[in-house]
Amino acid sequence: MTGQTIFFKNKPRVIAGYSIVGPKEAAGPLDPYFHKRLRKDDFGQKSYEKAECKLHMSAISGAIIAAGLAPKDVDVNIGGDLLNQIITSSFSARELDIPFVGMYSACSTFGQALIVGAALIDGGYISRAACSTSSHFSTAERQYRYPLELGTQMTPTSQWTVTGAGCTLLGKEGGNVCVESATVGKVVDFGVSDANNMGAAMAPAAAKTVLQHLKDTGRDVSYYDYIVTGDLGVYGSRLFLELLQSDGVNAAEKHKDCGEMIFDKKQRCPQGGSGAGCSSVVFNSYFLHQMRAGSVKRLLLVPTGALLSKLSSLQGETIPGIANAVSFAVEDVC
Amino acid sequence: MLAVYLRVFLVGGIVCLIGQLLINLTKMTSAKILVTFLLLGVVLEAVGVFDAIKEFARAGITIPITGFGSTLTKGAIEGAKKNGLPGALTGGMQAAAAGLSSAIFFGFLISLIFKARTKV
Amino acid sequence: MLSRTEYLKLDKKIAPKSKEGQTLFLAFVVGGLICMIGQGVNDLFKLAIPSADEKLLGEITSTVMIFLGAALTGFGLYDRIGKFAGAGSIVPITGFANSVVSPAMEYRCEGVVFGVMCKMFVVAGPIIVSGVSSSIVVGLIYWIIGLLK
Image (tube, one colour):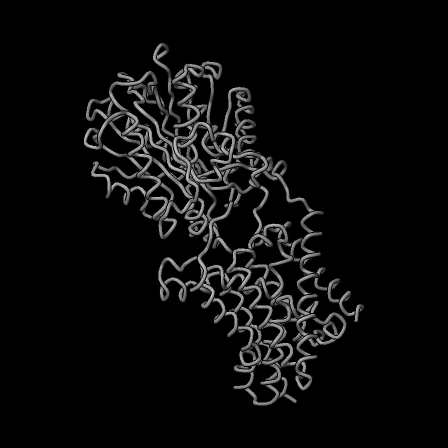
């Protein structure tokens, strides 16, 4: 490890990616890139928790099928979600018959799962890992906020939890996209306490991780085609760029935010999306598609997470953030 | 008649406008807003000015949750005057029984019939 | 990089704000309308039951309004009103009904006893506790004043 950054010697490959989303996400601008869209977000289940579990499972099996493999070909499923005791991931693993490693770092779980999967493959311990995360608007809402039918207004900084699940299948070989390096983030708390302003709570963690990554790798922002944050939202992205700017780094032209991209301005969530599923559905659909096609050659994915619970907020704690950076490259620049 | 409804609309509207102002300025949640206005009703009743406002504004002040606070307090005061200590304890709930019981019963009934729906 | 204090200052300065005028206007209009409906219910029952005193009319009115709030919540309409009306639909008694019914509906999946019955007052609990307690305190004060006289 150099600083906080791991360089993968054997360059684990992205064998396949799969994304499945709810109706609101499918009505957004990224619709053409998703692999599967639900017409109703209860997915025919009795509760939204069960629906999210089915989403998660579908993403994993979708990725395995897309790679032309069977569950027995996957050595480990590294998965996480937002629900208490990560029931979504573990209950979906119950059905899948694949060895399971549960993960949690809120909405940056996808980054954490990719790092662990890539490291296990790079070290030669396993040959394939399915890295999956999910979130669901209606399960997150009741766990973190209010009942669905309660007549409250969204505050101007609140984001909309993405209903969706994504899975990236990593392996020793296969496909033209590789995982080149990764920076493990530190937990950063700048004292933001408003649970409806998560973009602001996570922006410092994202900025620190990106700066550390650039330092450890000796790279410039211009090295990457895109620096993609997970779910800072419109306002969080602005703060993120301001923070980088205050350190002399101008990333405005290279920066994209999955939360900002997934919804349209007209979809009544002006700040965009959030959730553990947000970065994974956008990466596995839009960005993976662009890399496969060769129009994006180097990409730094930085899923961001707000590590709060309902209890910590009530006890007056501020909101710590975390961000993990994973650098992807297409074959010829690997 | 029309004047009454106009006064109801104006006072009720202003009460809600103050609530919105509190939400915008302090990011209060709906439960805190309700508690604040309920306590406002309790205080107005306790110092004895609620009836005067009600005379003027009618439903404009009784339909907002301030009315619920006033009902509770009025009951407790009347109970205290009539039956002393036990009256002070039981009067409020007795007076507010209609609102409370109906909220509980309708809430229960509705939850058995309808399912919470996801939002878009 | 910006220090913690500088960052919080920046956040306070550039954070997007609510559209003050629009939200206040909508709260005013919707709140006013709900109160007018309440007055209408009151007046209708006054006509229907000429012998009813003001107290009974008040009780009937709140029951009807609570029923309306509960039913609109059941049909999934109250939260839509709340989205644009804000305090206009929170402060009236219908908003209290909404805060009782919405958690009851939400936790139906966890069963009737431990879901609906246990969770019914997760939002409205503070309203009952503070209202009942403060009214008892006022009652006690009046009782003591009565004793001193």
